[in-house]
Image 1 (cartoon, rainbow, N blue to C red):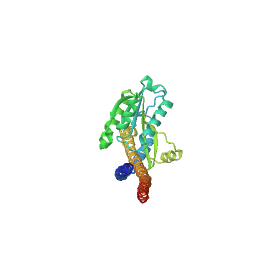
Image 2 (image 1 turned 180 degrees about the vertical axis):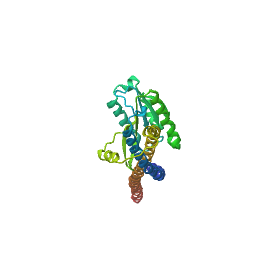
Image 3 (image 1 turned 45 degrees about the vertical axis):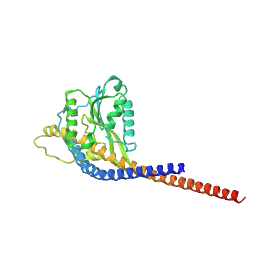
Image 4 (image 1 turned 180 degrees about the horizontal axis):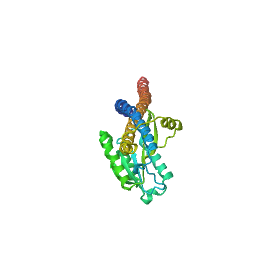
Length: 295
């Protein structure tokens, strides 16, 4: 009977866990809907800003410090965007492994020589890279508890100022791009210097055929639009990462709920077998006792 009580307690415990994972799935689904709307609304603006930037850069010969590429960068800054909470499957671990592999492939020896610095966004990113001995110049734990544009601008403005002073030769951005509820694209992209290369030649040709009239002049507009471009690149990355996190958590909690359902089914079967065995044993004892009395 003690075994039956243990199985009943286990069933009750798994049911309680199932209720929690189901509730977390519903919360993640509600947050995902809003986060996805923000991503969809931001992407066209960022793409349009990039197109204007490409047209402006091709219309002026003047150099902008934020667009000056360094042939052999010696000081690298990486902005790694993770999450503040767990229970989201491989959302963080897959990204962090991708980042470390990319660093080893593209910048071998930079970590050991102190040429690589990190700004982490999200508690999980800060904890992961701190344990592995990376040079973290700024940790932004709890950032996604109150995700807002002003906080994003503060980080991007600081990064732009450090780049302008010459403290860093290149700035990169690593994050999860939202693809679907169950899939994310891990990106390692260059934030500074600003790149205006267009991968699609057809799009570039189409953009060059449009005759723009710039007022007051392309250089002044370019100087004003580049800081906005930098701000929007980081803000887009944060929105993409937030939507990806909610989608990953929703999928993980859904899997946990289904697994709990399977465990409950196995435990119920085990409980019924144990109960039947106990009943059979009791009946055997009663029959044996009755036969002994009759004998």
